[in-house]
Image (cartoon, rainbow, N blue to C red; front, side):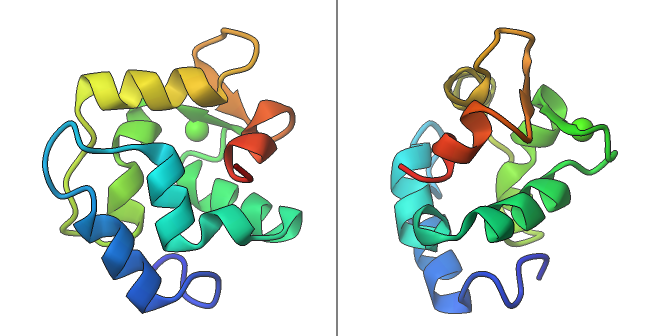
Length: 110
Ligand SMILES: [Ca+2]
């Protein structure tokens, strides 16, 4: 599990269970249930680096689509509309990706 030591297995299970149905993903709910909302800035940065699979320094749309799979390999992909809503929430400057600085930190601290 990619987030071992950062998030608890029980919290991850609860968070994934809450978003099993397509179009049910709500990042605020997910962050609260998984425990992401209460992580420190340093921990958030670690999580960002895991999500940024190609190490580009940004989380692009294709990486965001696979967001849930970082928590459990057999979790579903986000739908296009879920991905777009999630992306626009974290994309502060409208460049279509989420950077490690700026609004990203706030996305994880709702
Ligand atoms: Ca990337």
